[in-house]
Length: 79
Image 1 (spheres, helix red, strand yellow):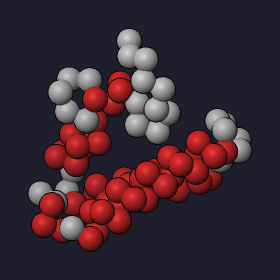
Image 2 (tube, helix red, strand yellow):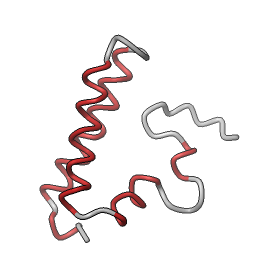
Image 3 (spheres, helix red, strand yellow):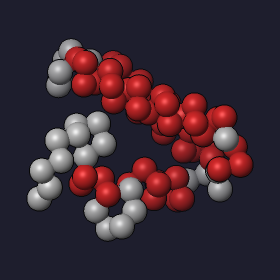
Image 4 (tube, one colour):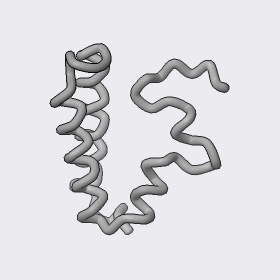
């Protein structure tokens, strides 16, 4: 097990040679993937202060929002 303590994007998301989020993108339509990113950001915003540390939850939501913005700004990077 890795000593990586990145709670936002931990090493176990990269097991198998591909990051989980990239595998999900490859298996989804662009619309599905953007919907996933948006809804996951909402999930983390909604549970902030109720599950894990609120700041950590906001950082997770920010990560998904940043990824969504990246997808929207760079449509040529989509499938």
